[in-house]
Length: 255
Image (cartoon, rainbow, N blue to C red; front, side, top):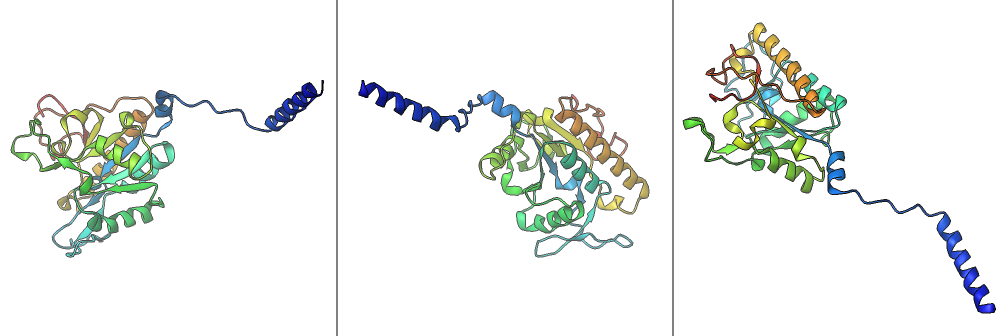
């Protein structure tokens, strides 16, 4: 009867209205969502710039001055720009720089790096001393232990929840200049890279070594992001800052 026609027309009209609508998108499982997140590559500023010399070095061009009241000069490591550009352009990672210094001190250095590489502020983030944690009391570093250590997991959480750039902490990598600044449980995700020092800036041989080390580090990072393993080239018993070591390292049993 009439009631059936009315119901039929109502159903037909509802069906036509739904034809143009997209089908519901299936929600991703937590595992699937994690697989789509980029890794964070966190590089210590010491590996990119020579920081806070007490005075300007003769014959060496100053790259800029830090943001502290003392306005101390800083100098560029050879290969630093190539490292940042290659990781940014050849991987899907979230790139960031970390330092023990306050944000105000670091910002002129970050502006210099961004200008040198052409990267925007959201393409290379800064995590300053406020993103570090108190030292791991169980770490066996003797009297060399710093008061603060880099914490990759904490920075990943801050990057995801505070900065609004979600990252996969399980795939993230830290590049540090000394093992004593890294928490024991995160050493397997850390690449130890000797920094250039102020005394090395006037040594062409050292500059060549550092540029080569940064290229090798970049290749190692890109390989690890693609499922490879970070290289293990730690020389047992050798001081962390000794240039007779291979220029890029990880931990060994004697460290």
